[in-house]
Image (cartoon, rainbow, N blue to C red; front, side, top):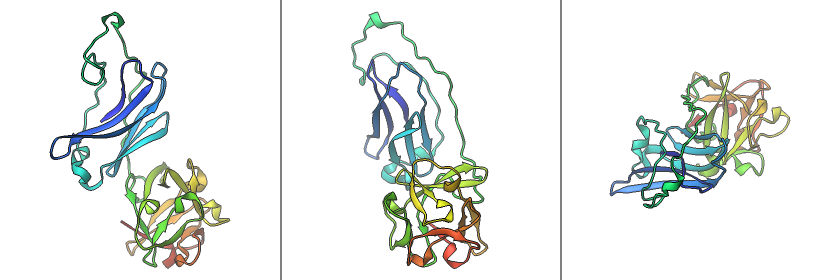
Length: 246
C-alpha cells in the first residue's frame, strides 16, 4: 500500500494498493493535489472492508477489499511501515539529476491507531446493511431526504460504515455523510459531513440477537415499519426499534 507517494517535483500525491490479482500485478488507487513541500497529514483507514486514503482528513479514494474481492486477501494480513526516499526507477524515470542531490525527506511523526471495539458489541470498522423488523433495509437516501426502511435489497445507499465515535458511541457513515438523530425533533437524515452529539449513538445489543440505536437524546431509532420516514423519538426499543445487520 502506498499511503503517500510523490514523484519528483510534482504536486500530485498518489495513494495506491498493489497486489497479485491471480494472473499478475494489479493496482488500484487515486490521486489528489497538495503541496508536498509543506507539512500535511497523510493517512489511510484500513479495516476488513476497505482501504481509504486521506490528506488532511479529506478522503480522496477508497479501495474495496471485502471478502477477498478480486483476490485482495493479502490486505487482511499484517503489513510493515516503510519510509523511503528513492532515486531512479520506472515511475520517476531512469535519468537521475545529480545536481539535485543530496535530497531529504522530513517527517514530523508516524502514528498507528488500532480499532478498539468500544461500541457495546458494534461491528466497528465494518460496512453493513441494516434490516428492520419489517424485513426491509434502511436507506440513507443519499442524504437528499429523510431516511427510510423500505429497500428490498441493499445497494450503495443502504451500506453504512460503523465508526467508533469514542466514549462507547458509534457513528454511521453512508455515501461519505453521517446519520443524524436530528435530536428526535424531526425524521433522521444522513447528510452531516462530520459527527457530533446528534450523530453519535449507543449500540444496544438485545437479548433476541437484534440491536437498537439510542440517540444522544436518550431515545431510540425507529424504522416506523417502513410506512414513513425513520425517527429517533422512541422511549423504549421494541419491534420497530430493533434491527439486524449483514
